[in-house]
Image 1 (cartoon, helix red, strand yellow):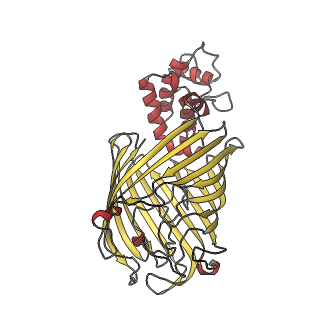
Image 2 (cartoon, helix red, strand yellow; image 1 turned 135 degrees about the vertical axis):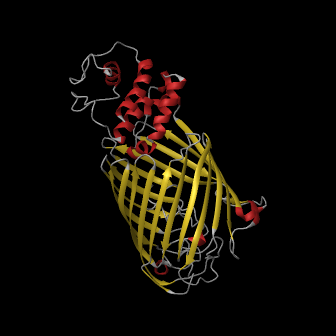
Image 3 (cartoon, one colour; image 1 turned 45 degrees about the vertical axis):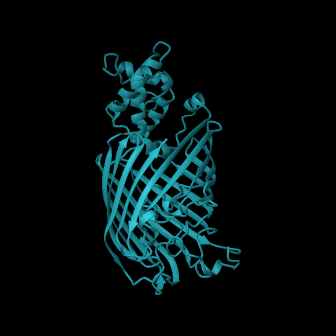
Length: 456
């Protein structure tokens, strides 16, 4: 890994150097070494520091996090690189995208040169078909969503982000006006401090996931207003926060189906408050494992005008996950959650007591939006007891009516047609309901889903 990254960065630094080489800072790199010129250039530019400031240790494999830091520093010199060298750095940046994000690396020098605000976005055209009386059919099988994000680098440590979304709109709406067509789903400020190991994030986030980005994200609550503090280094991360969910996605907290009306016993996810914490450990080949906990509470009046604290029957949950990369192609994910909850299930009418869910997934390959013709294929298994899904939204590809009170297999493929254009296909199979559902939207009909996603 070291030779690959070193060669790529040296090519860029060679064209960006504006002065003569400094003296070789490393005692273990002789002048007749094949890497001498590149090592001196990179050390002079501050891209590499060596070990203890004295040894290069060229035979030591660097970690992916060390490689990511080198890539981030080289990106600051991209304005002096050729087209081919820019493409090479972009490829490395995509390769180490997860590490760059997890380390909170901010390439402020580059951002200041190209402008203080960076705009990105994505769009999705989605098809979902599922039979049954409450399934998605005909025009209701098709929907779309467009999102726009703007990130402003306020200073070296502070980033402000604003995001807007159209939300999901069905083709069955026939173009009718919607009150919530455009909504602000991200309004937050991130502040790095303590050597950039600490991150304080305040405000609204749309991509927040219960269990973190490496878990399956079986349940999370869409738009989430929160204050979150995180410490992270190469070996572990600790996160703690408190917040309030701002929408329920049209779904009931106990696992109902989109479009149902609320009643006194059917409270939505919106307005639910939650304190949470997570501890994650990182190990070889960018693998990770973590444990997380969430405590729920609701106070005041809901939108029905009723005091509702006693009506939310899920008190807390805890979960654990392991996300393991095997070689360069294989990934294995295992996730377990247990919910402290009691009461009567609306989907079956049965008593519910501390339901849990088991999830496993095996994936081969990696579809990267920046790499045309890249692809992956995966298979998963989910086993969820009655009442395990809380409602709101989900990070799963499955419909809301196919997450609770069932066991099911699924398989899918992702293929990047061209840069920033991806096609995905998913299919469930061998789905069995654990208990007989009522008329609240649960179904054992298999789900077919396909979508085109583009980024800009």
